Length: 251
Picture 1 (cartoon, rainbow, N blue to C red):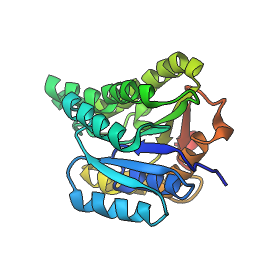
Picture 2: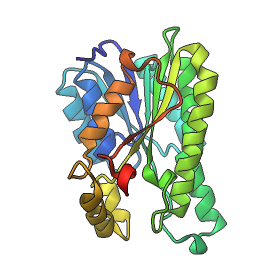
Picture 3: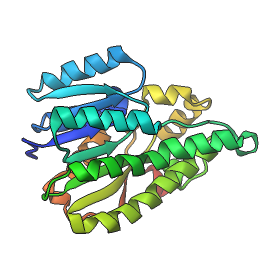
């Protein structure tokens, strides 16, 4: 058991898929939860209902976290409602899925900004709300940061930048008792995967080559996230933990 009673978490992209699984996992340990979403109000309302059913406070905030003004406004509302933050889960992601030779500068800038720069801005807003006890930051990445995946050149590069940024943030924030780490997930069959033009191939390849014999689930990712935000992980800093059932070892 991990007791998160009295703590507050913000989970971006927290109303579906991996984000919602993480939010629910933390809520079951007593953590109050703020979830961020960009478009689907129905999914946000459903997520809040599920989280509140765990007996904790929950609220959803609509904002494009890649937009500086919307991010600033969201944190203003969040601070008014919760007053502090103990756990930041940077899960919201987007990007252009195209071969490298078809990418425009706009595609590149957008993808790098939403997946890497957003983490920096989230942390800059969160750290002043973390008390003397410090806090936990977990950024969600993918194996595309270190492997070449078809159509994934811009997103993969942005995830690599994200992981590099985490290492630098970890060093800067360690004296404040703030842990910053990355969780890199294997292929997870969520709604986001439906946007991949080669979705079926990715799933089939992962199922065939994963030593664990199955795809990673959102709950698998949430389990490891819970460990990273617990006191048991206080000496894990600036690290990328891979959750893929062993796929990266053999593939």
